[in-house]
Length: 440
Image (cartoon, rainbow, N blue to C red; front, side, top):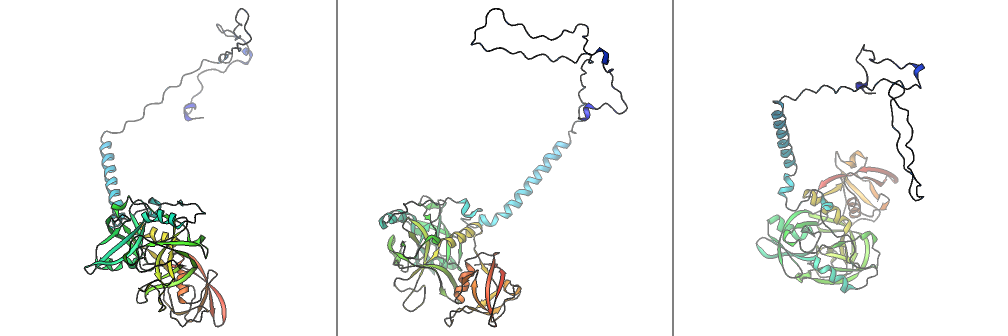
């Protein structure tokens, strides 16, 4: 019951209750209800009977229905209040715009960034070729329009560094290696991409990661180029056929074929004193030469499964400038997606750290990674890691040396909780660390 149905406090009903003895008696002028008589004449069998709802008279002897009085009108809003409300709304809107603009100021200043990362760009996820495709020619036909040559000038040298890349989406983003554009970025030199038809487009660096040896370029004029389909390196098997596409030695649109030689190969590229990259690499014998860097490694469904990044040389180093000897390495596409998403969102990438230094030299006995030092106020210190500890496993995966440890850690993300198996004084123990993060 609402408050309108309740009489004022202290008031009594204004109508008397009906006399029980008069129940069933008709008031003057009131007619009893009877249904309408049936129509005269025969009714065809196909005509459905008609029904008439009976009237709903007042109960016998009930008082006449009382009509409620409408509630009194509410007071009107003073005329002077509306201008105040409008001014207040305008002030709130202006403040909100200033706050929102400040939050995205960095994104506007950094060309090519996208607030939603990979989720806000138009990539291609469906494989363009059938699963049983065995034609390298079909793969080349699909992938060549999505692969570009990259020319990065520095120190005023025309030509500068050359490499390869592939189109990530229809918004004009291109993936390549960091080492292809690093010198041009440091010298603020011009960067161009060249498509299959020889068209040149100016490119800007959205962001780059020396740690993962990846970079994202923004080429607005190249939005008409076809994005490459992205696959999965986790589904690869040793011996599976793959194709490498790029511009080795400046020879654009070059296609080579081979197989997957190994998976989860921990390698490091670059000079240890200058932005070394540690890669949990896909190894292939497809011919990769200088200039292939940044180009796609593709399965036979024409899906990118890795980014060609380094080659082994006869001198034992990785990433040198000598020719192909059948040992090439590619960054898994899963890591490419993670790093590209971070760069698209913020213009920079992050990598996980534990706050401990380990030996990465060639004197390892293959039994684990020995901790050289533990930095203060880091996950390693808070987790109880000590100098001299030998880390043998990361989340159950075996670690043979310092490089393998760094690669294993960098397959995770900052904030993840990771279990380390540690050998100390001949005894094995488990240490759980929550990974910290740094930009790089």
